Length: 267
Image (cartoon, rainbow, N blue to C red):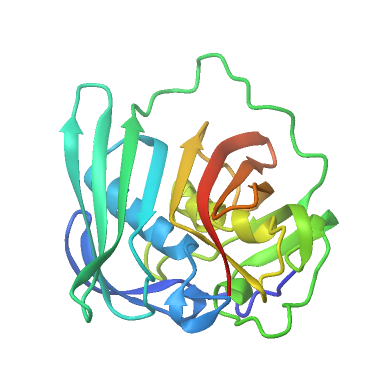
């Protein structure tokens, strides 16, 4: 769909790190949403909150929920995380994204982490996808849409397109979160999962808005590849409510399922 703008694209610059799970960051232009350069797409903040979560607790993220409290600006932010429940086997971690200029929280997250154990138990990863990233199609960015996130992510469309109403199936590869440290598999997954509502839009985005107020992702296993296949569908019932759902695969099989509650309104 959209060509990657540069091989060294990242989402954030780390300004100050204050310890595990706490930092100040500068969002780069690559985080910007399709609707303008001043606010972020939901994917990078989700990945950033996961970075904070994974910084304070060891384990595998099994469920991640992000609550978007308002527009996330492309401006300096503080991110922090803390353990809410430290159990012997599972942990519940909360994280916050704070807009320093406006002095308000812009996003919260809570995540359940499970033990990281050898993969010697039963596995039902699902069938591998029928396509590979190389099989996907490129589409130009729709006229009037901003670059930012859309240009930073690599896209290969299998079914549908962002400008075509209906379900969409697309391979995605998100850039690294930071330039100077590794991006975890779950962080890369969350950078992509928030795109379900756009990949499967059933209304003309020039006329209608369908903003997600939250993102909930249940992880089956951590991805084993940077390329992720998003199979997304949006359901509307004629009111202000909508639901965007997706299954996410890597080349081996299923890795996660996601849901987004949508606010549907005329622009």
